Image 1 (cartoon, rainbow, N blue to C red):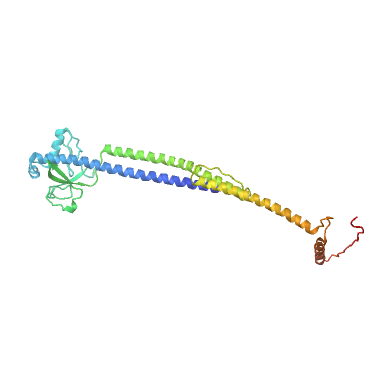
Image 2 (image 1 turned 60 degrees about the vertical axis):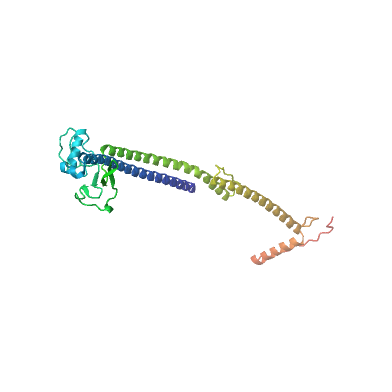
Length: 325
């Protein structure tokens, strides 16, 4: 029936919307959490390398000012990278610097707007008093940074002594491996979303069919009752609210059918008694002939018909002798 199908469709739609909403929310949370965690890991990895370079730079010459008089920080780090054979894109700089191959051959410094230019992370370096050591393109060397601008500051320490303060700038540029890994996660989320959507549709129609089965039986039974078949019985499934409703309907149907049968029997008895009383009122009990009451009723009816249709009316009276014989 249309009503049952409409109810089933509503059940299916509600289940599908609920399932898909949950999948979307979970996907957004997972994507956000993975991206945030990757950014955090990239920043931590960049800070570890940057801290190691700053510590080695200061430890090699005693202080930052003395080290600056001998060689610049970028030159020191490139020389260190060349000796250790580190990859040229490791985060040793706070701003655009020229790079060097592991073999020691100097590369042309890429411009910041070139596609291959993607420093893993930028840091502003301050001394413990807040004076800029490396501005990262935002501050000039020697400038003091107010405390309110030192958000996210991380100390660089050596033997429980604070050598400098590092402030991360912007978002990290993930490596190719990290970007590929994120792309794989996004692809997996898309596949999971499609599979979860198909499963939600299938389970939605399946569960809605089960949920609407009892209601369909109830509507069918109610429709039969409206056509006069009062005694109806529906199958009780489980013990939920629908099952309680089905049990109540079965009891109501049985009580109503029983009351209707009793009422029908009473009506039959009353009709029979009415006919009997009528016969007793118009017939003589001894002779079973009509009495004076019946004669008066019939005569009055015929007289009214005569007046209405203007027909003649005749009476014939017979005198029966020896009537008892």
